[in-house]
Length: 406
Image 1 (spheres, helix red, strand yellow):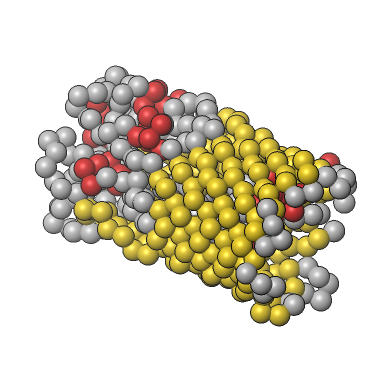
Image 2 (spheres, rainbow, N blue to C red):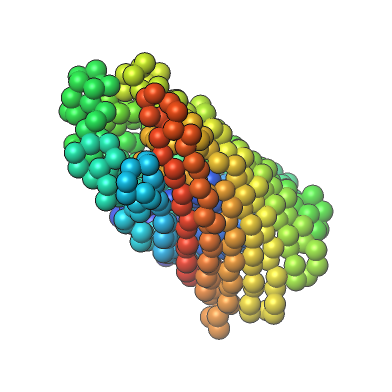
């Protein structure tokens, strides 16, 4: 299949990605790609598929000419209690399907070109309670990345790469009528129940992969903050008149091939939520207007995520994987009320998966991971109600992918 045709197909498929709702390392997925999720997301120095371009563009020269197609069934269970007589209430919308697409082609022995299409993450709540208004509380943020990627071997053992991230995000909120008194217009006109809005932007991700010995590889990536256009319909909800930029992130990884059967990988990743006002600003409702540069936000802290994984080649046709992902909680107990919209409480994930090499040398991969239940309790003392909620969540995910070299 010709290069231009394949890129066009992947890009077209990307714009049809359905709803995405995740909250793992903050609102970022813990790993991008079925194989990569199976090892706790530890992919910076451990390339296994064309989806590695979403983590480390510099690793694309290591995966050769291949295509990967996958689908995840993601099921988050979210609960909130603002100490009304009902107690804990559960959010609906617990089933989401998240596709992924990866393509890579070696243009010559030292240069690769690829495209990855994936959901970076998101936030979704669909409460059957009127927490903030006269109708049930609802919010949905989705982020889609289409990332053309070039990678170059600068020596036989060291590669660098760059992805151009083309980003589309959508947002919708309902049931926030009580916040209208904190808006510049003193209304709901640009706050809630105005339908879905779209924001677009572009950015880059830089990556490096090095084979420092036959047994050890290292890697690193850096993605600067991605500037996004404003959610104009919600300019009196998010700080900076509707800005919701994508935080800077960076990380380093190590992979050690213990023997011909076992590889152990570890990544350390930092996500700078504290640099995006709409995410980081404290809920100072009453002292600052919604939509202002210093307007109320979610009060999130930065996340540091440790990702650990192991892959075991059971036989020539079967690879087994397992992993652990731990990240600190971005959500502060003093800010839980507003985070009813985004209860990102989870800190730990257990992951596992396998790949079967088929008779035609294609690969069938599966993954299962569980985000362990975590509760964040509010202290219920703030006069503006910023901390007036207890929140908890757990998650399950099953994924399947098909990949082949060509």
